[in-house]
Length: 91
Image (cartoon, rainbow, N blue to C red; front, side, top):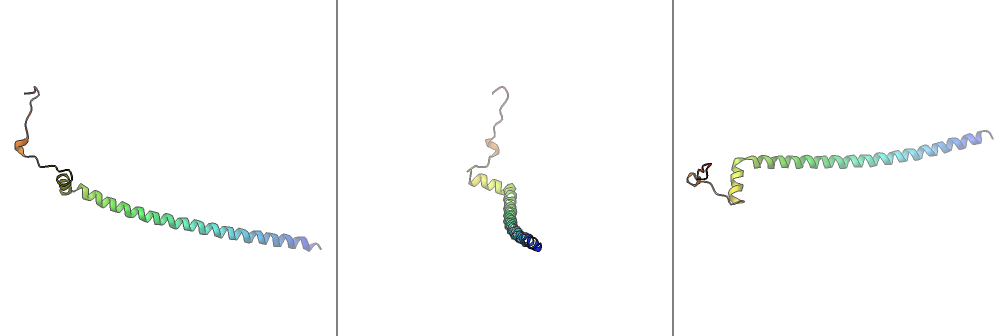
């Protein structure tokens, strides 16, 4: 008779441990999935950064700047005869 409460306590603690292990595995899987999502997001951001750096380097190129100014903004080259000198007194 004295062993009966011990057996109930033993079985109860084992059941609690089983549920805790299931809960731990569920949390582990959830965290692993979130980690995979963040790693995928990091790879996308690295790729986006690399693409933007290439675009930035291309935009710094003087030839592409001149092409953009002439094609998109319809600017024209300034000739030397078009430049006028102005004095400080307004004449």
